[in-house]
Image (tube, rainbow, N blue to C red):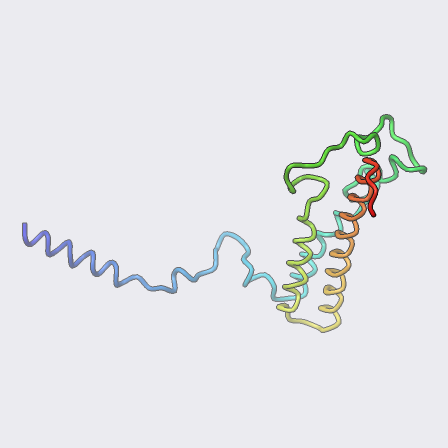
Length: 159
């Protein structure tokens, strides 16, 4: 019995000591990780291209988030009254999937903070930096526009 106890003690001690710490610092092999991604300007282009689908556009003609961006304006009328225009749209309980979603702003900030990690021509890096700043400003504008539209439909005066 003593021999089994000594054997188990020696095996457990060896198994605890033999493990190296560098195995815990490895990058994942099944997905693209942050240290492996922000290296070239093609990586920047790939990330920046995801922003273009969030610009408004006409359905069936091009990409974009809005089905018909002029519905509810003097340029186009829909078949029914939208909840935004008749004042029945309520204040959301959470910030996700709502009128005030900050996901796009967060993605643009993440892009702008990581642009400097890439290596390449300075003009190309400056181009993608400018695109990141543009999209961040556009997403802030879109949030502001949605807030002003919402407040105007509720007839809340901003003083």
